[in-house]
Image (tube, rainbow, N blue to C red; front, side, top):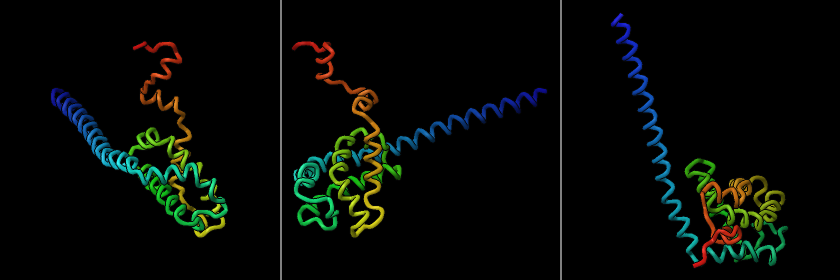
Length: 181
């Protein structure tokens, strides 16, 4: 009888040790994944501090549709419009690929870049759709970016603020809770 109790106790200790080891292993995997996020975030910040890249984004968002017909697709856009669109679109396509393949946490990208991704996709979507149907790239083109744009559109600013615990002076003023300095 004492041998049976010792066997049960040994099994219980082994199970507890297995659970604890598994928990530490999963925690370590999470830390390793998070370590991948820092270089990405640093790179994103660096790219957005680049004046040429920001000019390309501003052009894509505000000037592309004004200056060019979406029926040109992307391949038939004249220079420098084509280069600007490709620079911006494939930057976000690469970012989207990292999300899709779980290289980075999708929440980080969606919550940080949702506004910009939605604006860029809205600006290039008619060009991409025409290119997919009639252009040089018949078939899939920028599908990862489109997926990321959909993900970003599924998160409202209010949801993001709540999820991240963001506070705003403007919202405090509207609610009448801001203090006067």
